[in-house]
Image (cartoon, rainbow, N blue to C red):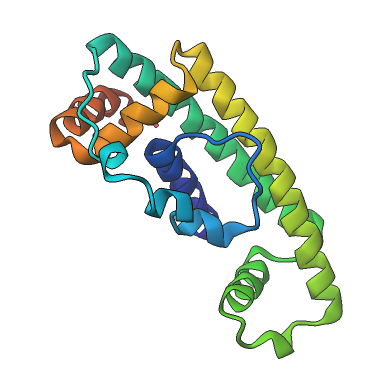
Amino acid sequence: MFFKILGSTIIGLMLIAGCKSGGNQEGEKEKEQPSLQEQQMPEQMQQQDIEVSDEEIQKFVDAVKKIQSIDRGTQQEMVKTVEDEGMSTQRFREIQKSQQSQEGQGDITDEEKKQYQRIMQKFQNLQAGMQEEMKKVVEDAGLTMERYQQIGQAAQQDTALLKRIQSSLQPSMGNQ
């Protein structure tokens, strides 16, 4: 479940803020909360009224579908990474939760802390590779990263645009 939520969060952030290449990733907590930059975005940036053609929507949807596939693969790699380090996904989630809350860290052994740190480092590497892959997917779909981000941000504000995107996505959602 953790990895499913994580993947959904990654896709959500891709749709909301677009793929940022080369950013410093400090762990899973950042994926769950909007960045300070997103929170402080000027209102004119948040309230964009942009024209999006049917062709651009199709390109956007094509990119989203491929990004979902990348996300599923990354989730599988993350589970494998945890297991390869000799830790169960259940224990990883427990440690992750305690690390984020800064509570209950006394029941984590030194070896588990080392395992956790190795896992998180590998996650950062996976995420960096995933971001590059996502950027390539967006560009291969025929959009610039800037335009992809504009469409994603505009869809948050414009329910008509969001519905157009969702209706283009729905025929393929039944096939997954």
